[in-house]
Image (cartoon, rainbow over all chains, first blue to last red):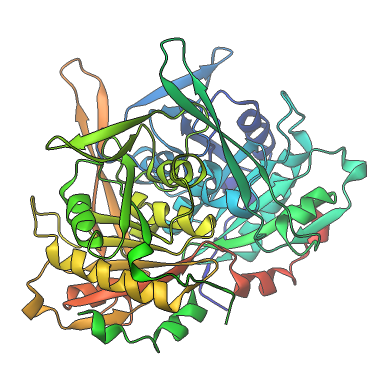
Length: 268
Length: 268
């Protein structure tokens, strides 16, 4: 077992940093904050606008600006002109008086399973939290329908937050949680899963604008070879909440061994 | 051994797609193209402007535009209004008449080792190639000095391209190559390495603009705990070319086993 990041605090002193990639005004983050406030002091630091599919982008060539964001006349959090990873970095290193006990990113409107994990701003925010040494969770609701009900996913996020604070997480690991958009009665259970190898079958829709200039829209469908519910995508399709432990050590150790036998000395 | 992606073509029919994240007008891509043209038909599809630290961003909310880019009056390649990952997707799925045999991303101006791998546009372009089933390599020159000499790194890229075409790569694995900015005589050798766990120690420089509005600049140094040259960062610091096999299965299998013993059924 690797070294754990854990905190021993009484529940009422828990501090949670909340961020997302759909923007500070999204429904998913509002549902998450409402639920987490039942167990912790919550600080919101989130992008000022939608940042989906930004991957693990960080802003280095421009300065970051931060504004207080009010909702129905009440202070809701800090809106950052940047990416989800920027939000976590600036929250922990500049805005918060002390490190939060936990970071929760979401609730994303749409799934983050299989290969989508590498494109996901929601996941990258939680990854950044882990990089900074703070236990972190990414939560997504697996539907693209407008105005879905985030309340069940928010309750899962609350319960999992308490479990993570109790159990701790290994130093370089975060949890990527996907919740099917189903009523609680239709949820079959909660599974610990692996990242599916399913890929997007990308196509480009080639169009011409009114000025005669070509442009391309990315579109595509997820090819889904797995039916095995030990993988994230199959689990959510079959009605399970999926919890995947992921890390940011991208080394392919199997190929590392194979490459030792390549004639690489000839490259110099 | 996993399933390999390999091609059996005579050398003169090799086709290589070249991209980068520093932009199509960068010095590093010019040096790379010059060298790879000795062994292959090269097509350049690269961002129209600098895209460093974009991570694995893809463009979904805007259409992509593509322009022919000329250098000294000669056609050089296609400039895409998008990210490095966008360039690879659109090249393979819309612009090229057939799939390239290999994708080479770079040569990046600056290192992509340790945690920087997850922020890197250079690496994400090669990852996208791997996602599309094409053997892919990311190449970086580990200096931030202006106008460095990319020629030795370009020669390494050419030789490694031939080796990869001969040996093949596992289906989901790419090679992340970092070359020290040293004369060839001072390069100690070529090593297959693992991704270092070194992290950036981030700080924010808090300033106020002439209008009295706060802003923050990200800055920081890489904390470097490794001196072991089996890790990428230590290898380049000690004068070795570093080749790290990386993949995009982010599952933490060790923690996957640990989580099976958590009381996750209580979450539902």
